[in-house]
Length: 89
Image (cartoon, rainbow, N blue to C red):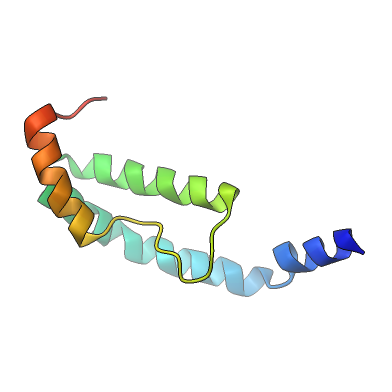
């Protein structure tokens, strides 16, 4: 009984979930590049960071309506952090 419920929760809507994932990924690319430029780091860093966030949230789970990507407010806060501490990596 529990296995059937888990299967329906995880695999009940695969085609729509795949389409939603592709749309979000395509929208996230210019957003990540723009926010990395605002933060003063290489755009490639923004793309890698956005990808890592998406993978972590995909495996750890999330909630409907949960924002798990870069935001304008975080990009503005990162400007000060990068200026004071530099970019590591």
